[in-house]
Structures are given as structure tokens and as C-alpha cells.
Image 1 (cartoon, rainbow, N blue to C red):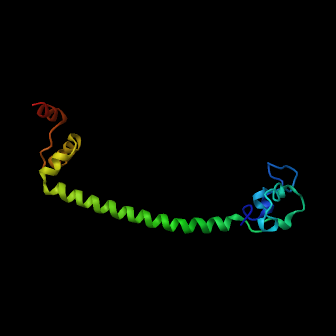
Image 2 (image 1 turned 90 degrees about the horizontal axis):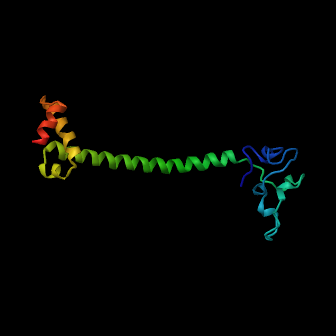
Image 3 (image 1 turned 60 degrees about the vertical axis):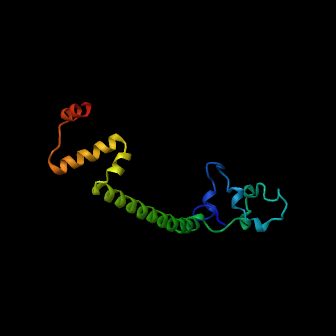
Length: 137
């Protein structure tokens, strides 16, 4: 395990223990103690007890852990992007093909957005006032 950023001395004279060379009990190497539950209690609060502290800092261990897990997150993110791109391409194909059955399933606001996009493409876009007049008819 590890203790502190660079080593156990990072905890010496901290705000929790001003004026003392203490470390949290989690910095104590459990292999240095008996299996008794209370053997490690306050082991970090005994000055001069450095021989039972973890010697290495946690920065290298944390960086390694983070890099290992970032690879997994990166693979999952890439898979998600590929699925979304595939779904987007399929939806665009269906909408551009003019499938009226599919369009009837869309919410009215979504259908209106696609109608406006088609009108812009065709150069027949109506003003908002004209659109409201036509939708109430």
C-alpha cells in the first residue's frame, strides 16, 4: 500500500496534528502487526514508529490506477459514440426517405421542425404568422 503523496512524511506536522510527526493509522503496514483487531489502533500516533509505516507515496499508485481505468472508460465511450452515430445515420435515412408512417409517430413539435427544415431546403419557408394561420385551419 501507500501513505501520503510522496511518502509518509507528507503527514508530519499536518493541520490534524500540529507540532507532531503523526500519520493516519491507514499508513501503518498491517503485516507488521498481529491479527488482533486493536493492534493497529493509534499506530500512526506513536512518534518514532516510522518502521511500520508504508514507505511509498500514493501518487504513483493512484496515477497507475487512474490510467488503467481511463482505458476502460475510453473504450466504453468509443463504443457509445459508434452506436449513437449508427442510430443517427439510420434515423436520418428514414426521415430523408420521406417515410410518412415513421413521421406520423413523431411528436407534433418534432414533425414541425422537420417540416420547417424541408421548407428551408425547398425555399418555401412560411413566416411564423403564416404558419400559425395555416395550423389553425
